[in-house]
Amino acid sequence: MKKGNYNRLWKWHFYAALFIAPLLITLTLSGIGYLFYTDVENKAYDDLFFGQSEKTEQLTIDEGIEKAIEQYKGYSVSKVILLDDPYNTRLTMTNEDGDQKYVFLDDNYEIIGSQTAKQTFSNVMREIHSSLFVGGTVVNYLVELAACWAIFLLFTGLYMTFKGRALKKVLNPTKRQKNKNLHALVGTIITIPMIIVIFTGLPWSAFMGNFIYSVAQDHPSIGNPTLKQQPPTSDMSEIPWATRKNEAPTSDDTHAHHGNMSDMTSMSYGSSISVQQLMTKVEEAHISKPYSIIYSSTEEGVYTVSKGSNTGITGLDVSPYEEMTTYFDQYSGNLISKVSYQDYGILAKWFTWGIPLHEGHLFGWPNKLINLSVCLSFLFVIFWGFKTWLSRKKEGKLSTPPKASSGLSIGFIIFMVILGLIMPLFGISLIVVAIVEGIIYLIKKEKK
Image (cartoon, rainbow, N blue to C red; front, side):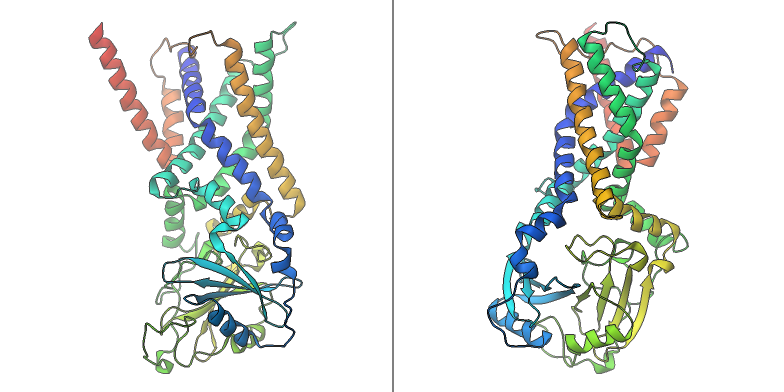
């Protein structure tokens, strides 16, 4: 690239950092918080996760569920999460407004207490990290766009480091040169790890995430196997990412009892088998804890029993190799079909590993510590980038990088086009930037 292109990339690098740094800092800090959510929740919610009720009567799990329905009026059970010892059983209960409670049952299936779902540490961190706790399509796109521009910052920073020989030793360096060298050195070291962290988080994004999932669904040979029957009616976070929108089979509707659809005490219908009976069927199918049971929301639906590597639930995550989604007839309890990790295509397998790597629990504490070091280093790079700018900033001026003295080169165009194709939302933002710059150029030309 020519010197003019170096200055142009420097200019874009500068403005991108200036505008998205606050968002990147927020995403990084919330990511660190989410990285340790299981450790925080195990301590903060010790009484709910591991405690015992004062009542010692031994109940069946179905009796415990019925007591929860009676105690929390207006709420119905949609999911039952059965965890390994010493964790207690957890119920997800939802009311007509969509509000959720987590209710915990001890070894005797007696009620210990409950949580408001949106106020748990993991959900707060997740909401900040994915949607800045505001939500909405625009905010989700903004978060994704910040991640895309972070990729741009890393690549352009890497280019300027080597093109500008920022790491070259200088005798008696100035304060600005020291800041610049430190910014460049740490940025170079974390470029590849940070790109991996960002790209493994994109499956949950609004724009690119839906695109990736569509590709995985439309091309089963590389993505997700498709069960060509009635799709599930609920989108549950405990279902693994690779199968959460798969079409699910339906139960044998000859058993269905077409009763009053508004009477949904526990989101099960007619002569559906009990949870205890289902657990026996699950055991017979050689499915071990931890797993979640998702109730059917229709008379024709099925029980969905799943083990996921990226559930977001303390105590529920399993190894990618163990991930599976199974469907049981809600009336007979028969296992209808099963989709496991071995059935995934290469794309689905990649993200089944990538997401827990991003979340920091793929290989235990070393994964957390590596992710933590990458995040802290990224914050360090942002901080030292601003220090570098402030060390050369003249009072009363923005002190932007020098203007590009030449036109766009083929190399520059190819670089931006490739990034735009890999990250479509980034590509759209580039078009917007180009239009704005064109308008500014025309205005200045008209004034001259």
